[in-house]
Image 1 (cartoon, helix red, strand yellow):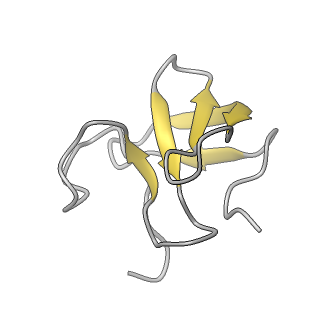
Image 2 (tube, rainbow, N blue to C red):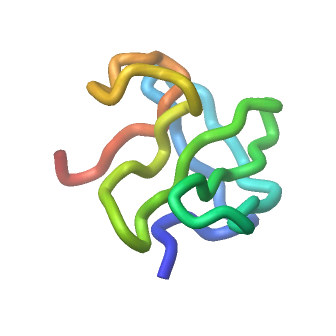
Length: 72
């Protein structure tokens, strides 16, 4: 089961609310979210904790457009 649900809205680290419009999951390990701001974010939550991070950014989640990580 994926962490993020299509239709939900999430807060970025820079304080913007972004709606999830869709999901691309046809390649295992590269599952991504289609978001209302036009930025793709990973949702590899079925097999790792890499979720909500903007694609191509550092794994330390320092990029401001990443979703806020709950419980971290």
